[in-house]
Image (tube, rainbow, N blue to C red; front, side, top):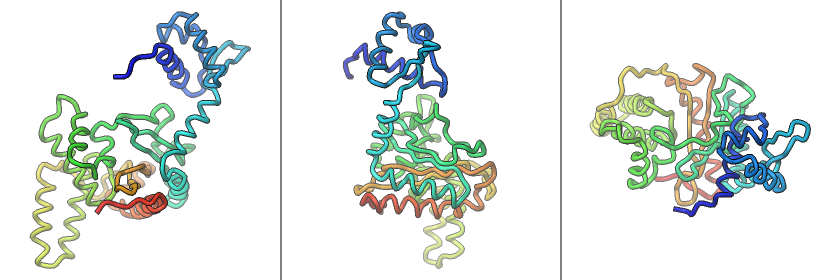
Length: 292
């Protein structure tokens, strides 16, 4: 574990307080009370941060807000993500072509971090808010990042569920990962297995006699323990697909967010095909390749 540096911890506290609510400025007294620092310590920290451009002071109200240097640092961090420039172009193109919201995301440590959003001006799209741009990848969240991972990595992800999870829940998550691998994209939640079953049943109708037994066994494996009550009109709130690097690892994702009722089990492929094509272009641009 890294050695704590008190000054850095205090600076982190201040910056998080200032960024907690967009548009809100705080006084020294308010930040000292919220952080547990003395006013003198808080003021000294703010003076240093202001000199660095990380905060700025409004003289008339004697309040502080996030500074412009944070914008520079944030964009510099985003621009270092492989393929982010292509992903951003594809994100805005998908928004216009499909009339949906869209956002780009990547995995950083154990958290999913939003890189950019398109369509945020419309409240019809349930896009992540500014205070939710970083969330823990705890099952079922983050499944698309682990669907192609080695088993030890998957096990580490599943271990984040917590002590109350039992074998049936772990098995449901594993089935969801298998469905994502087979399909190439994620629709999230309990819909993963249900839609995979629907698609396999369609394949049985088109298959030869020699293929039907194998497909029927696959359907039986997926159905076993799968949640019931799913149907073609079940709403799909998020449609997520990955781009891969040269080692076939997920490097970032694009997520489509429709209006209420816009995307569902019956029309999901209409949205999935252009999404996958967009991520193929991102993968190609960074010299990546899809897993076998």
